[in-house]
Length: 111
Image (tube, rainbow, N blue to C red; front, side):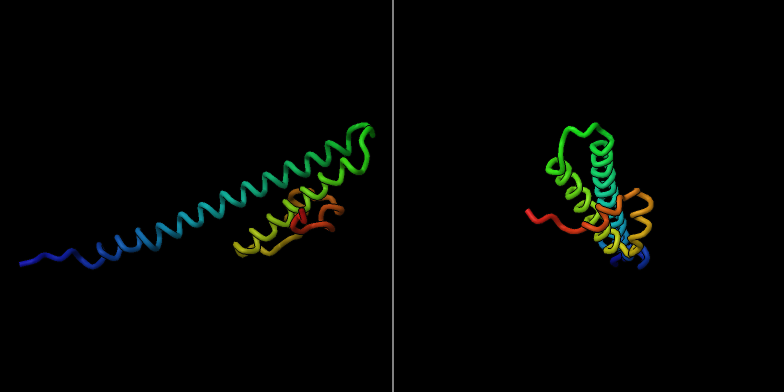
């Protein structure tokens, strides 16, 4: 005579391996990715604001890469949030204090 485990045990095992467990790991990675990209945007905007607050020794050629980096980081965050179902760009602009110049240049960097 062969004993078979109750069906809920085998369902739980399969869900843990492929369904719920995997969904949880994917959600964790999405959250971590949003955090990394959000920190990159914060650092890029802070670098731009620090440059703007400094005495005018350097010109526009030095400022341009800072604006481009912030614009690319903004684009990356917007795309990542949209892929997660959050499509409100206005909240990103407001919450991160994105300068209008950066928002106008939002997009991938063309190296």
